[in-house]
Length: 381
View 1 (spheres, rainbow, N blue to C red):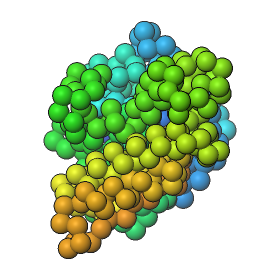
View 2 (cartoon, helix red, strand yellow):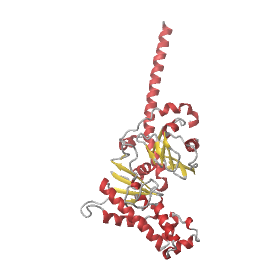
View 3 (tube, rainbow, N blue to C red):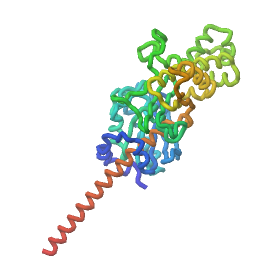
View 4 (cartoon, helix red, strand yellow):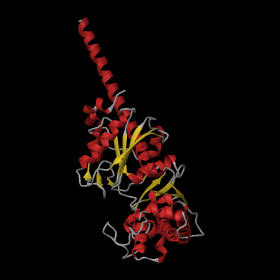
């Protein structure tokens, strides 16, 4: 079986095939080749890579820590290449898709900005395509996750879908008629930085009152630590749990204690859920989707979070009582959604590469037939 190492000298030539991807993704994915592809999910703490088949099944998965952000972009690229080469030794991989936690340009080549990595206007696709002998596609990680949920998860058969990823902050993506809506410059879906409280909490983005300052993992932990630091009577349970080490309070810990019935943790998740519902109502007014899919690590709280979000959504929805309500559901694919979606999107460029490669082969065969006929003619003369 051929591996990437057998063809690396042709990587730069293959990269020239992939300048754009057609916008009609719905049509394209139906005719894309049913071949294995690699999906890469790059976050602030981990890089996850997996071989995914055409039905969204993960055939093999690898995971490693993200290199420290103070290191050069090449260090992260080296990590990606090594993971792909490792997987390609055991699988006949036809394309690589990358879901990056950051802003990706409309051409899906450059990572304009990644908050957890030293990527600034980094031509990631071209750099990696020059080192790997298969097509490469780069997209925002939330876009990749939304695509996976639309194809294989909670958003199947939905024509108008909005995904919200609740993690450290809030990310998001919009799918309409089978297309990911990336916006003119490629950075659509940054819902977390809608301002919902004028003059509110300061956000790392530089503004105040951003949605993710009230409904995210960071917001959940901040509120719990503030109550614990103030030695509030309602926080005694979590203070005892961390033995007074307030800095050890985490989002998963709060969710776990809420499931065990800790009143403060239940209330904090309700507060986060209510702010989530307010933001969803605003998005419904602007986008009018049929379905909201809630993913990300904080969504593990399930109905402790999503129940209050549904209630707040119904209370704040404009025109409530006189319009259909969008469905709000939890994502099904969990932390692997970004990886699966990136791999499936890469299958679209695999089709274009295979078609272009086939044309090159056909041209070469025609030339060989012509050259052979010329040699035969000369031999007769």
